[in-house]
Amino acid sequence: MSTLDGFTPWPAEFAERYRALGYWQGQTMGDMLRERAQTHANREALICGERRWRYAELDRRADALAAGFARIGLVAQDRVVVQLPNVAEFFAVCFALFRIGAIPVFALPAHRRAEIGHFVTFAEAKAYVIADQALGFNYRALARQVKAEVAPALQVVVVGEAEEFIALDSLYDTPCALPGPAAGDVAFLQLSGGSTGLPKLIPRTHDDYLYSVRASADICGLGVDDVYLCALPVAHNFPFSSPGTLGVFHAGGKVVLAMQPGPETAFPLIAAERVTITALVPPLAMIWLDAAQRRRQDMASLRMLQVGGARLAPEVAQRIPAGLGCRLQQVFGMAEGLVNYTRDDDSDALVAGTQGHAISPHDEIRILDDDDQPVPAGEVGHLLTRGPYTIRGYYRAPEHNLRAFTADGFYRTGDLVRQLPSGHLVVEGRAKDQINRGGEKVAAAEVEEHLLAHPAVHDAALVAMPDAYLGEKSCAFIIAQGAPVKPVELNRFLRQRGIADYKIPDRIVFVDRFPKTGVGKVDKRALREHIQAQLSLAA
Ligand code: J2J
Image (cartoon, rainbow, N blue to C red):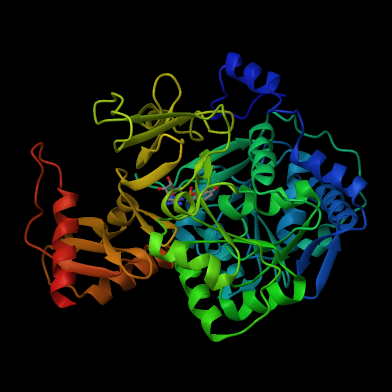
């Protein structure tokens, strides 16, 4: 089969090396589940509310749905936007699509018309899989808008009450033989946090992703007795693969899905299901710590809390082992590939004070200055990486790829790090134009473009401002034109344009002009310092 157009493969000599090293094993995701369903047929794979699916059932559902998806015309390489909350069907849908070689594009439940419209048009999606409603939002209404505005032919598949759309339940057909994908094929498209314009799509192959999953499961010591609580959004790269739900399936363990990540939902699940490991972003870890002081729930089964996605303050890190009665593991990863973990045998100081080291001895790390020259050992610089599970290019983005990757294939992560002699990385900051709102990434340019569409906005610059709980929030500096406009009106305008709520600026400041750098660009560092000074004056 031909490779997906718009996908940048690894050069042949690298692919050969990764195969020879045994990293790329020639297994697809669908094969992995099939294998587990054979060895662990009667073990529980997935708990979602009252529902408990064993491995054999998950496998059967994937086959039956694959037949149903084929019936509605989906074939290998067709893109399918999947936007589901933490429900069991997410896995039935994913593995069904994997089995026919169709390619899920993973949207987050928070995405709205602007983002979904973009994924659907950019990836030329044939289908869109949603829940009827979740957490107070009606996804069918969103699907109607997307169809009406940008994709009349889009097939919409609904988990739950389908109304005029296709009910997922009606697609469980009699399994039939389908030609599956090859392990070197793109399995799905993940979303990048982005820094320019709209989110880029990240093509991950079965081979490369399963390597990172297996190696992550190994690092975390996962086994059949592990019970993983998936509290973060299920499609995000962290809970999907680091080692996440896929790592647990690989190990033959059990995944427990939580609809919400707060202690009121998560703690009772930990007690009832004897959860052994879970993953959080730093703000949630702080909420859990506070809640654990107040409510005495049985958390004795929990052996490891992974925290990643954004900077974890060392003071919070130090409180976790005693506060939650488990080990902490810091995880510094990215949907583009490279993932770093602190290890079981690391000292307490390394676990609390670093973001770990790379999964693989073949993850190549470069730390460079602004002129692409190596910084002296131990100093802060730009992190670049290349390796057996780091992409060589974004999907259909040749121009952007020239900037995001070096000529020899290193990915410019946009993170500023320093490396200890042990190999551990410490994330010191960020060079990319992004706000990391407690793990949720906001590309400044994307929000600025929406703001600029308002007639009263002459210019806009979005920057990060410190926040005790989220780490960072967003602040939009605006140069107004014409009739004055209120911040609430601008935010209402952004909501009407259909962007995810977490991208709405937390604060709006009007200014007459922007400070400029020597080369005449907006000086965002000066804007960040300005808002930081204002906040500390107000405190
Ligand atoms: C500081 N910044 C971090 C950390 C990610 C595992 C864990 C996280 C992600 C993820 C992931 C950080 N400290 N511990 O995909 O598999 C910031 C960096 C990074 C960006 C990637 C995984 N962990 N970050 O967060 O694609 O800036 O992946 O480049 O969402 O988050 O974001 P994302």
